[in-house]
Length: 237
Ligand SMILES: C[S@@+](CC[C@H](N)C(=O)[O-])C[C@H]1O[C@@H](n2cnc3c(N)ncnc32)[C@H](O)[C@@H]1O
Image (cartoon, rainbow, N blue to C red; front, side, top):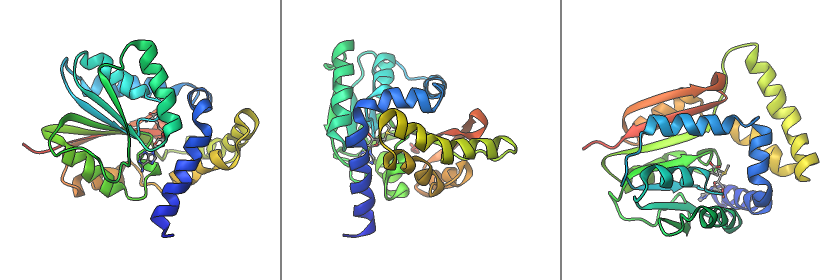
C-alpha cells in the first residue's frame, strides 16, 4: 500500500467513525468560531441567485446548505468519500427541504466525477488538509469551474503572532485531543487534527499553490488571528 492510499484510508476511517458527533464537536472545539468563518466566507463569495456550486469534501453539508440557500434555485452538488458524513448531511437537507436542489455524490476529491467548466464555484471547507495531494485537488476544482468561476477554500491555518500562537498551539496540540477523548470517546481521531495541520502549508504557501495550479486574482483572508484562512482564486476567462 503506498502512502497516498494509506493517508486516504486513514482519513476515511476517521470521518466514518466520528460522523455522528462531527457537528457538535465542531462547535465545541472551535468555540463556535467556524460559524463566523462560514458567514464571512459567504459574504466574500457573494453568491447570486441561480449560481451553481460543487462543495468538495462537503461532510455533513453545512457549507452545501449555505450555498443552496444563497443561490436559491442554482444546482448545488456536495461530494465526499464518507457515506456516514453524507448521511448526516442528507438528513439536514431533508429537514430544510433542499434535497431537490442539492445532489450528494460519494466520490474522491482527487478525481472529481464532473465534466470540465460546469460550476460557478468549487468550494472546499476544512477538507484540503485531509487530502494526499493539495495541488491535485485544487487543479481538479479549477478544472470543473467555468472560465471566470471561483475556487474557494476555507481551512484551518497557522497563527504567526506571539503570544497567541503559543497559547493556541498548547490548546490545539495538548488539550483538544483530550476533549475528543472525553466527549467523543475518540483520542486517535482527534489527535489527527493537529497532526494534519502540522503537515499543511501556511496561508502564504497555500496562496502560492493556488497560483501554481493556474488560479488568478488570489485573495487571502486570515481569520481569528490566523487560526483559519479563506483563499479565493479565479479561473481565467
Ligand atoms: C473536516 S470535514 C469537513 C466537512 C465540511 N466541509 C465542513 O465544512 O464541515 C472533512 C471532510 O473531508 C472528507 N474527505 C477527506 N478526504 C477526502 C477525499 N480524498 N475525497 C472526498 N472526501 C474527502 C471527509 O470524509 C470529511 O467529511
